[in-house]
Length: 126
Image (cartoon, rainbow, N blue to C red; front, side, top):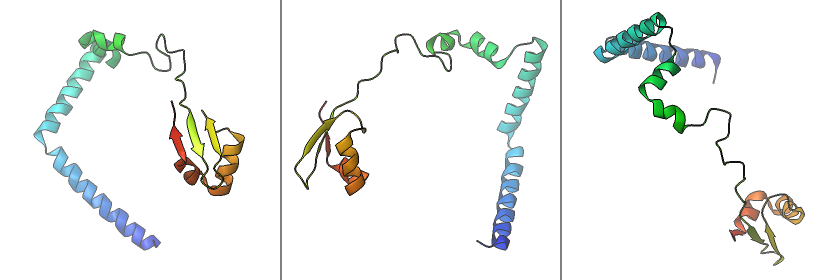
């Protein structure tokens, strides 16, 4: 795309967004929501409360049902067991069973025939 075409497309996008913004700014629902947000933030400042404090006050169960970010929930120390996949090479008739993709022969097959083709030869055993 030439620079002038990009300029015109950007200019057109700006005009469309300005029109959309104008329509939104005239919407009564938006005005009410903005007014509510302003009053709520003023009240929060008056009482020195954060959004988390408000959420804990309005829905105390939400804090106990979710684990804190970055922390694991209790009892999740075990990994999920990988399923065994069986690959059957249609060219050689050779069969491989593996739980992961770090198998020497499997890597050789993927290098020779491509990863997508080799994945097509797989079936999940358990």
